Length: 436
Image (cartoon, rainbow, N blue to C red; front, side, top):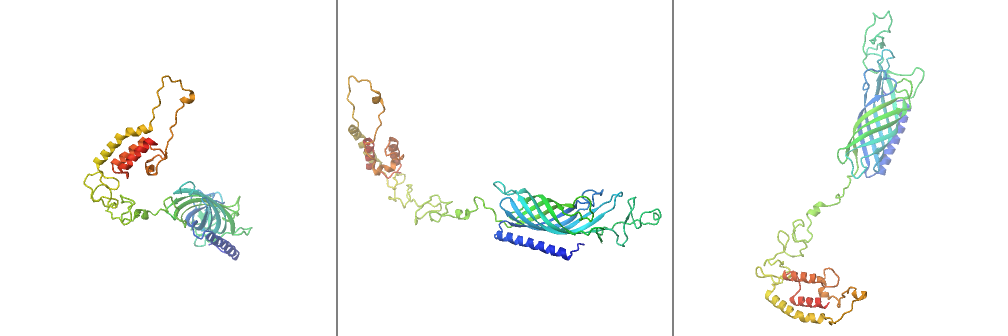
């Protein structure tokens, strides 16, 4: 039984008040709860002090349970601070028949402040499993009790043969004594015969653990902690250094962090799926004719009507009833192939005359001296006239000069009906080509 004195109660109240104020401050520092979390844990405690060292039942003997509840505040990617309260038991027993048969059990209650280092957010992506470490300081209350008597209030007497009897060992009591067994009920408060010690202490926890992601707001935790005290009386037995204990804990951490954004978190995929940029009633994902003008009637694929099948939509077609398979220009107007051929023939016939105006043959000299280096230098042709605005659209490389390749591309477009040029425009273009 843990007896709480008036002094202990005052100390506990002060400590609880400080922890509460710290938790409130953490909440204000993070009013959005983006980094605040709570942790609930259960575990086993193993006493590592004087009593229990001389026990042949193994290291796991004497392990007692504990519960803990804490709050944490993450500071950046790695550091964090937290407060924690815990309750549990510590126990130890010696069963070496050549040494005093000491035993104790103590309920413990306390809390503390820890500094954490988490490694789950290091790197480009948050890890599903990662380690963490922590260290801190805490305040602990304890009250050791011993199992000194059985349920009939008979004291235990440990004999050299390893038995427990109801009488002190002697030659006279060997036949009179009765063997009894421990009931493991810790009924007697333990006290030092010479020192009245404080039943509270400061302790320092150091721990390591691992966290496993269970979702956006929960983690599973497992960890081990070593705790060293500033007293050697947890077991009511002073021998050597201060007492300590170890714990192994498992628990759940719930944190109130907002779900981390990825590169697509701000993208409204629903809006993209339902977008209709040209407003023709057909979603962009299904629209085969994007950019339809407002008010133009379209079919299920988002394309305007083309009733004469000439490849030019009706709203652009200046000749809505073109004959089947007829060649048309960009406006949907039928191209008169005979007229085109006639104009082309006339142009070819007159091309020689046009060349005579441009090409001047140099006089033939009977004897020509060898050219000097300056005369042998290449002659750079300079254009003699500026490019008319009506031919700017076919100056594909924007060099202010119409090349033979650009002439060919223009004629190809004209023959396919993809050019806005008329036959007269072509004639002017070719004249300009030789004149430039």
